Length: 243
Image 1 (cartoon, one colour):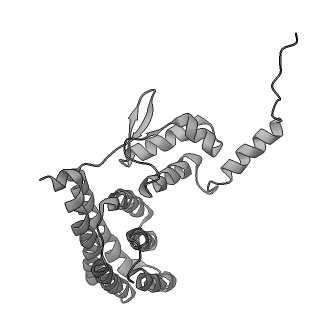
Image 2 (cartoon, one colour; image 1 turned 90 degrees about the vertical axis):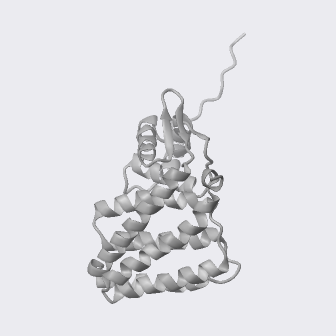
Image 3 (cartoon, rainbow, N blue to C red; image 1 turned 120 degrees about the vertical axis):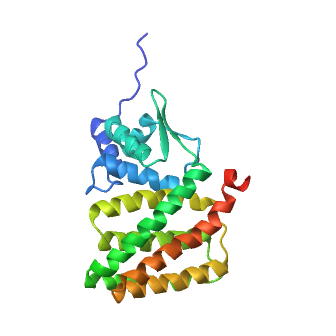
C-alpha cells in the first residue's frame, strides 16, 4: 500500500502568508522594535495578563518572522520591566509591586515636568497647532459617562506628543518607557467625573503654558496631571491597600 501523502502547501502561498503577517508591522522600524512595541501595547491594553507566558515560537508564527527578532523583542520588553525571562521557557508577564509603582509615578512626575518645561522652551511653533487641537478631545472625554480607558489613553497621547516634539530623542525614549509602566498600572485606577473635570483644567493650563513659553507653569501643570492619577491608583494597588 502506498503511504498517504499530505497535500503540500505551495511555497508561494506560504511566503505570501508570511508577507501578509509582516505587513501588519511598521516597516520603518526594525522588526524586533516593532514587535516589542506591539506586545507592550497589548500588555497595557490588558490583552495579556500578569503571569501569562510569551512564547517565542507562538509570537514568531503570529507575525510571520523568525524567532531571532522575537527573542530580541522579548529582551527589550524585559529591560522595560514588563516581563521576566526564563531560560528554555520564555518570558513571563510580571506584576509590579506597590513599592515599584510608587517609584514609577515619582519618576513619571519628575520626567513629565522636565518634558513640559523643555517643550515650553523648544517645541516648534508649527507643532503647537496640533497640541492646541488636543484640547477639543479633552473636552469630549471630560463629559459624563466616558470610560476611564478613553480618558487615560488621551492623556498619555498628549504626553507622548509633548515629549516627541519638546525634548531630545533620548529623553523621549526614557519618558516613554516610564510612561508605559505607569499607564499599565492605570488598570487599578478609580476615576470619576470630578477627576475628569480637574484633569481637563490642568491640561488646559499646561497647553497654554507651552504655547506662551512659560516653562515654570508648564512644569507645574505636568506634575499636577501625574499627581491626579497617582492619588486614584495607589490606594487600589493590592499590596498597598493592605497596609
